[in-house]
Length: 105
Image (cartoon, rainbow, N blue to C red):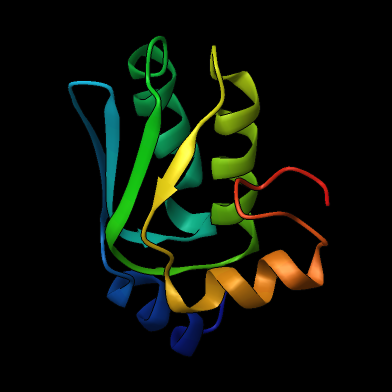
């Protein structure tokens, strides 16, 4: 059973969302493990024809969030360009040896 402190922290995690606007998938909130399964289900039907992921409204991301974006980008029809980069994303990309579009460098 999770500790009370962990439960409080989990409840405090900012929500996350994705929406489609033209050829852009706009992500917002916290792209963290807690939200990845839900974001995955929301993103898949929106993915065909997407060309950009807008991350300007993402407050933070963890390794699960980066993995989510990388897998979605890999499944995109013609590749994905990224607009914005949450603070943690650059460090995680470097740690996992991923390029700017989350492909292996």
